[in-house]
Image (cartoon, rainbow, N blue to C red; front, side):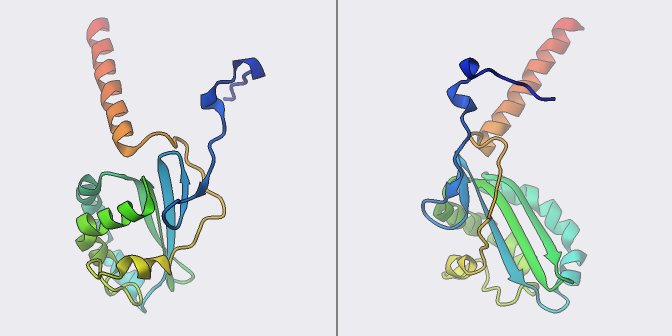
Length: 174
């Protein structure tokens, strides 16, 4: 469904957000939301080893995201006959604090995912990890975020308000 607005009804919220490079690192940023995409070389047999533990990695994502608290989405995919791995994430905030946060709070999870899978993986606790990772980042040519002013925290609050409002409506109507 398309909603049309006249030029007179346009508001500042209707303005097209500006997508730009992160001010403190690699990747794109619009509003409160940022992205990075990494491209790794996979070790021989790495995809098979990853797939064998993918269910546990998926289950652990919920635990580690609660510790990090700023990830909108994260995905990993093997490409080119399992010779390369793409990792892509959408997150809140600036590049450098995000990097510090994910390796401080989710380092064991990243090691579980990529140790013995990715060529040259230095380990999440390596003091040069962010420098190594920066060499693997592929800057997006185009990126879209549907709600660039909504942080993960904002989204969680909005979900709670909606649930409470729906419960109130159910109580009143039933």
